[in-house]
Amino acid sequence: MPEIVPLEWTGDSLRILDQTKLPQEQAVIVARSPNQVVEAIKGMQVRGAPALGVAGAYAMALAVKAVDTLDVPKMQSYLKEMAKQVAEARPTAVNLRWAVERVLRSAMGAHSMADLRTRVDTEAITIHREDVAANRRMGALGAELLPAEGTVMTHCNAGALATAGYGTALGVIRAAWEKSRKLKVIANETRPLLQGARLTAWELVQMGIPTTLVVDSAAGSLIARGEVDCVIVGADRVAANGDTANKIGTYTLAVVAHEKGVPFYVAAPTSTVDMSITTGAGIPIEERPPEEVTEWGGRRIAPKGVGVRNPAFDVTPARYITAIITEKGIVRPPYEEGLRQVMEGGGA
Ligand code: MRU
Image 1 (cartoon, rainbow, N blue to C red):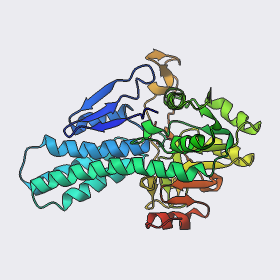
Image 2: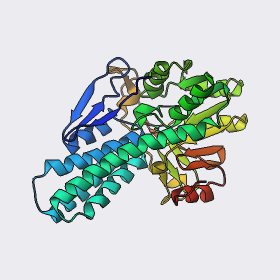
Image 3: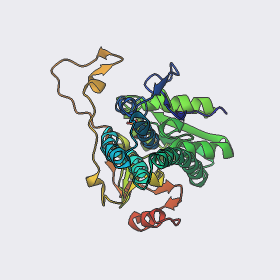
Image 4: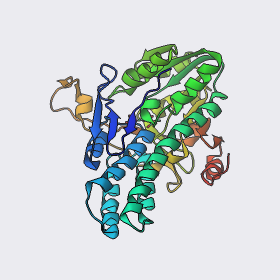
């Protein structure tokens, strides 16, 4: 099966598969400066929490290359400023902040510019590699939770495109499907930017997994009618108590799944867990431009003068989540204890 490569580091540029053009066109943006990466993040050309982290790490590596100085403290203070700018490009996905801070920490220990350059490049490449490995591990662990035969619903895109490769929730689906080849997937289209219709459906069709696309407003009724055996989604940030931010619409699915006794799983690497936030109430929710709701394909679909709210994410309370699949183990309620264990290095 050909692997989807959302991000490719060449040593002096970051090649970004432009997700706004998929599935019609596989166009690549070549970013040679940190600002170009920030623009690609804001413009959703690269998206999905772990992919944002990897892109952010390479933005830091590009920042080092953009400034010609032999003054290490000067470079370090420039990188501090750059880390802030990159992290703020999209505020909900904690992977972005996590990755830039990790690269920054590696730079802070440098004793020469040559050392700093090596450290920053190495750290960004390590973050990239670790994410693919984490996804494969989550796939193997999470596949045990999915039924051998049946229908799995997913929301937004938590596939290879949203990560460094392989995917979180879609990685679990892929691993489970490779075992039995009897799973089917319902992909929710995911308004307003249609990550489910454009990206998840594209990935699943390429993998040969039988997939049915539904509009978001059909999802709840399909769960209620017994047509869904479990729901699995990715995450943009998991608070210390297990409350989970993910694409808008996830909360509604979790409530319906809970009401109908359908398991609801979250697949998220530990880079998505934010132990500094005790509950979901502390997770910042990104509000995106109103045009994403009032327009489609550059064409106005709502009357001028209408008010718009466009929160990109919602928070699902931990009590609706059956289990959180991380690369270090499957965490079940009560999440405070299990998440602490995986974050401290051990398994759950
Ligand atoms: O706004 P997006 O497309 O970046 O939102 C992405 C999601 O909500 C994903 O479900 C989440 O980042 C997990 S990706 C493995």
